[in-house]
Amino acid sequence: MACRHAVVLNHEKHHKDTAERSITDYMPDMKRALERYAATLTPQGPYAQTEFNSHVDALFKQIAAAVQPQWQEMQALDRKRQAEIDTEANYRRETAMCPGQFPKFDGSQ
Image (tube, rainbow, N blue to C red; front, side):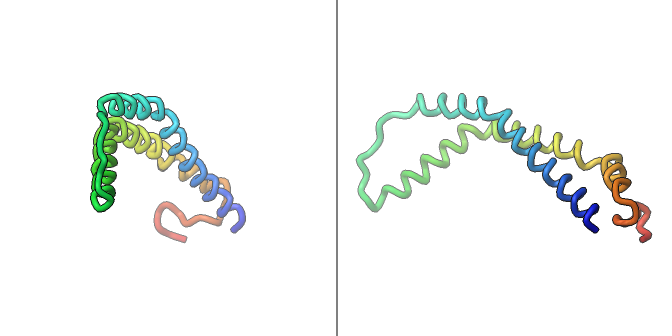
């Protein structure tokens, strides 16, 4: 089943590469959103040691909220790109590369 293994591995690598491309494509937008948010920050603290972690947690939540629109756009684009890999036509093409090593699409062996 070496052929099947290679085809499946290549298919999954294509998914990984696609996700990386989606993330890379949205990095400039994320960076701009972070820069816009950072420009609104004012000096904070000092905080008591016992309060420090809660303030850090709150800041991270604010940062996450600031980039949420770009994050959602990136996820939508990535879902669309990933779906283009997982088509029936693509599965049939990949299956044809290794005759007898994949189950039939009709449920038979």
